[in-house]
Image (cartoon, rainbow, N blue to C red; front, side, top):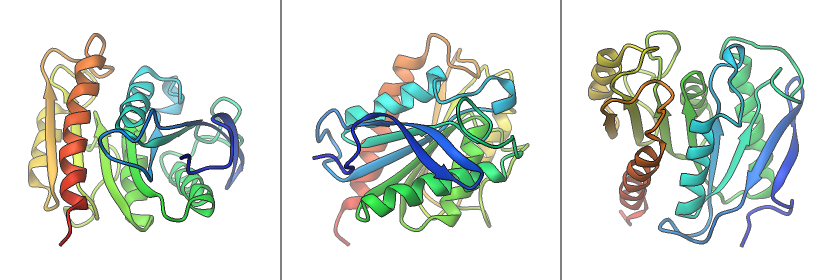
Length: 224
C-alpha cells in the first residue's frame, strides 16, 4: 500500500524558495525491507549539470524501489522547474528538509532513508542531523574535503559510503580514511576501476548497495 495519496510520477512540493520539482516512485513491492519505508535521494552539483535525472540518482532510486521503499527524487532550488537560485549546499539542505516535512505530513509513520550523490551527499548528510528519525544514510562519492558531513565524528544513523577507486573528482584515500574514522556504524563499498560517475559500474553499484542496505536495516529493525 502506498504511503501517499498522490499518484506516482511528477509532483510539486512547496519549498523555502517556492515550488520544488519532484518525482514520486512507488515501491515495486514489499521487497526485502517490508512496507513503510521512504527514501529521499539528492542529486549532484547544480552548477555542473546535476539534476534528479542523473544516472547515479536514478540507480539509487531503482535500488530503493526494488527493496520495497517508496522514493522521492527532486530538483534543488534553481534546477529544472524548481524555484530559487543555487545556495552552496546551505539552502539546498532546507529544500531537502521541506521535502521530508511534506512527506511526513502525509505519512507520519514512514521510516526515512536519505541518500545523495557527490554534492547531494553533503546535503543528505547535513539533513540527517536536522531531521528526526532518519534510519539510514547513503553517500555516493562524497567530497568530504569540500563540504560539511559528520558532527563530532558521527551521524545519528548507520552510513553506507560507495566510492569509485578511480574517482577523478574527490580525494579517494581521504574519503576512505574519513569513513574508517566514523564513530557510528559505517560500511565502505569500494568499486575498482570506477570513476566519479560510475560509468559501466551502475549495475554492480546497485547490487552492492542493495545487499548492504538489507543487512544494515535488518540490524536496525531487530528488537532491542
